[in-house]
Structure formats: structure tokens, C-alpha cells
Image (tube, rainbow, N blue to C red; front, top):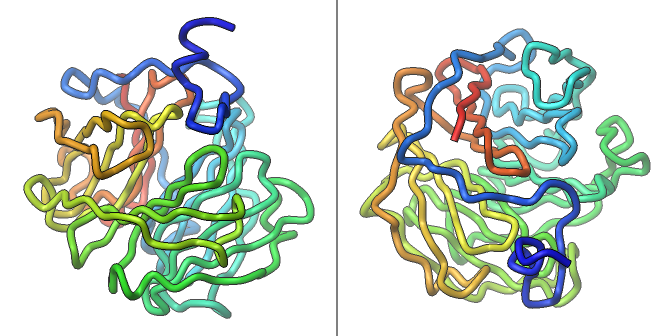
Length: 277
């Protein structure tokens, strides 16, 4: 096993499949002048999530409270994007934020802003949201009354939620991987010195870097964790990158698995923007 692969191993020995991640150079990132509008299907884009192979992207829409699924005929190439279908979450919540999928595509997690809960769905066909069915939920109201984004450790034993009221990241431990009913709050880390309205959240595959984007700064902020997946060890790297020339209300952030490309969406333009890092 390569040294790079060993470095991506978590505490439980999980090794992500696919390309080896290289930490993005956020300070010197650049807009690729590549974007695609999703305004035809969405009213208020609050997050985006890519299938790990780059052949699908999912946009959370807080307008009609649904997830929109798109295909990319060429992986990671936004110019080849086409709309497939949507899935309504309105039976669970009338205002939704972040979305996250289990790495095998058989589970989907959606943040409910009004219900202040994480909703867990099962997909009988992996990555096909038309086969999603509601399973259970988990309240985060004790920790954060205005949750936004959600992120999981790759082995499903930790969950992270951005909070707009507390301007913070909340960390939860799951005693049974990917089962939100077994989640318990463990700790919290403030990001208020950088962003007072945090929205999107992304973490590196080995859990030693964390990235947020939000309304106030209109920028991506980078943090380091000296202990992987432990936000009590998180510190700001004094590194940021403005996306305000493209989106003034950014809500979602994603990276290509090798860290070479960054994608941003937001509710002002309802588009996906691509950057080189």
C-alpha cells in the first residue's frame, strides 16, 4: 500500500477507494470560467453532492423541498450535465439544507431546517433517488436550531453539521455506522471568526482538512485538524478564497476526489461553478 493511501486511513483503518486526494491549494485557486445553470429545476439551491465517480450530481432545492438528480455523460464535465429526476422531501420537512449520500449510494441524508432534524432515506437502487424511501430521523435541535450542511466520516461513524445560529460545526458519534438513530453529540467548534452564516461543508478523505462556505464572507475557508475527524483539534489556516464574483450567497461546496477541482453552488444564481485548486 502506498504512503499516500496509508495517510488516508482513518482511525478504523478505512481506506477510500478511487483517486488519491491531494490537499487543494485554496489560497491560489482560480475560477475555470465553467458553470452550468440549474435554475430550470431549482428555486433555491442549498447544497450539491457528487457521486464519487463524477457521473452524477445532486442539488438540494429549498424551494419545493426536493433533491434534483443530474447525469454527467463525461465524469466531472459540467457541460455534459442533464436533468434526470427529483425526489420530494416535503413529507418530512418544508425547508431543507444539506444532502449527503453513503459512499455506496444506498442511503441519503437530508438536513431539515424547520424540523431541525437529519432525515435518513434508503435507496433500493443505489444512486437512483426515485427509489428513495424515508427510514428515520435524528433531532439536532439541542445543539443547533438552524442546521445547514451535513457531512459524514467515510466509515459512517461520525457526522458533522454546520449551524447558522451558533456559527459552528457540531460533531456527532454514531455507535452503529450510518444509523442516525444511534448518533450522539460529542463536541463543537466555532467558525464565527471567519463566517457568521456557515452553510456548505466538506472534509478531506482522511479527515485532517475541513472547508466551509457561507453567506457572510462569500468565501471558502480552510481549517486543519491535528487529530483526524476530531473538530476539537481544528484551527483556521488563515487561508480563504472568495467566490463572490460568481455567487454572493454560496451554500454548497464539493471537491473532485483527487482535490484538483472545487465546485460551488448558491441560492443567488442557482448554478454550479468550477474552480481549479
